[in-house]
Length: 285
Ligand code: FAD
Image 1 (cartoon, rainbow, N blue to C red):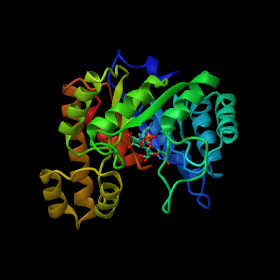
Image 2: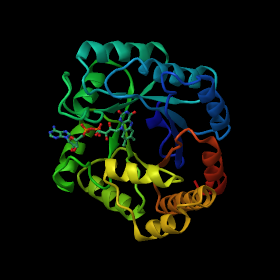
Image 3: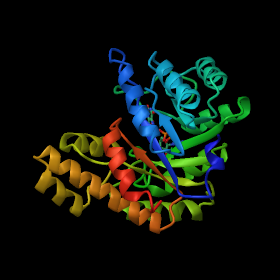
């Protein structure tokens, strides 16, 4: 199913997983998918390492298995940085041939030390390429707190509008820890004429080191309430896990009450946390 066809009827609930590392036991991800598919998500998206490395085959295989073995709609991520058009076409041919109908078209992070060689400078160019050559539903990323490379919110929104106009069917946000960033962004997007559904990305934070790394990388603000939680529970993994789940549930509850189009849960491949969050919000979303 195309993700764009799911919106409007309900609050969409989707999950994100990443493929196993090259030398990791592949069976683990299938155990995770077994448990995640019990939640009957509207779709599961599978990340893809930037640079077109071999691990991308796993993204396509997992996204394809989700359809054939788990009867779950899937999305294959595709970062275009460093890719030539022929390489992108090769990957997109495989995606189409595998029966996957949805692609999350991304640029990917610029590698340290400068720009990678490739035919695509921005995700919008990949979106146009897919729209011109493939019959796929296209999803793209957006940033409620502004992409770290953008000068300001206005410039970021101009480029987001160009990207959507290139052929995007639905957007998924970077995670945020203060829902007010999402509401402000959604309003600015509507004012800019962006009419496609916007799913809110939620990252349950259960590990102190991980959150500091993610916040540095993604330019996400740590609200005072969140910092108090980290200070109080950060040294106890069990307590931080409970508090992080409660925080995510609180965010989702508020977003659902405010009529969010969908919730995209960054599961970090932890099916227990996804289950606990889903159990707490299943009658809300
Ligand atoms: P773009 O839309 O190209 O935007 C990047 C920057 O360029 C922004 O500052 C934008 O304003 C600016 N820009 C855009 N167009 C122009 C233009 N014409 N002129 C000047 N500036 C412009 N990364 C992975 O490697 N693999 C994944 O699987 C993955 N999944 C993700 C899923 C989600 C939901 C999100 C939010 C991010 C994901 N990422 C992934 C990370 C993403 O690749 C990075 O955030 C990357 O830095 C930007 O990607 P983008 O597609 O948003 O880029």
